[in-house]
Amino acid sequence: MLLSRYTSYLTTEKRFSSHTVSAYLRDLKAFSGWLAEQTVGVSLPEVQTAQVREWMSRQHRRGDRSRTLQRKLSSLRRFYDFLLRERLVGANPVRGVVAPRQPRHLPALFSAEQANHLLARVPETLLEQRDLAMLELLYSSGLRLSELVALDVGDVDMEQGLVRVMGKGRRERDLPVGSFALKALSAWLAARPGLCADDEPALFVSRQRQRISHRAVQQRLEVWQQKQGLPQRLHPHKLRHSFASHMLESSSDLRAVQELLGHADIGTTQIYTHLDFQHLAKVYDQAHPRARRCKPGTED
Image 1 (tube, one colour):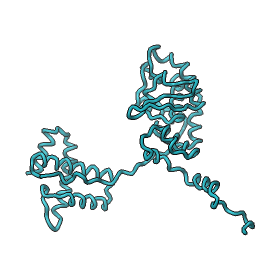
Image 2 (tube, helix red, strand yellow):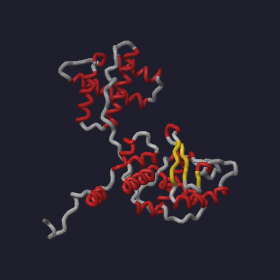
Image 3 (cartoon, one colour):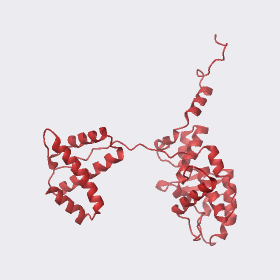
């Protein structure tokens, strides 16, 4: 009876799809079935936070991933919000229960050699000239896709070698632009009038003669990847990740890379510190006074 009322609520009042309703009920029935198996039977309205945590622990031990656990918690939380609204419980027992965090996986990055190969193509068309300028700028300055698309012509200072971007939280930052990127941008700016009107402010435009879209950039990068014969899928974040990793590998200056990437929290930048162990070992051997090995026959 209770599940029937809840199903009606999800369907008629919330207007959720049948697929969504089925997913919520599947999680709820799994939890209800587990409750029925316990020595001391507890009905759904009688559940306490301890039972929710115990079920989460059981699901985790059975191999549920963090994302699955979060979904199941969301299903239970929504159900008990409904019971709270119907005054069938005094509090939501799921509030305060947190699933393990989803591990943060980074996309595979390009090596410096792969990045050089990617950018070595000589543009043959107007679109390729634009594409090369976008690729060079993404890798040169570590831009987000949204930051690249939002750029206007006036945001680039060719003389100073700077680009001004508007990042998350409406935070502006000025970023250096490398010489290869400046060369590609200069060539694109000279060719750009052939693809857009004089009053178009966008730095990068599409065949429709207006600001290029996020999806169009992604599609053009996939075309470029195929033309260059790269085995890895090419997308904007991979270039940003490669930029950050290569900068850290060369400088080890986490704080500077944080500023370049526009991260408000340095903890976000630390995800880019997964450097190759052999490189770290080499730096350690060269830098640490007690890491240097004695040459054979020189021991005291």
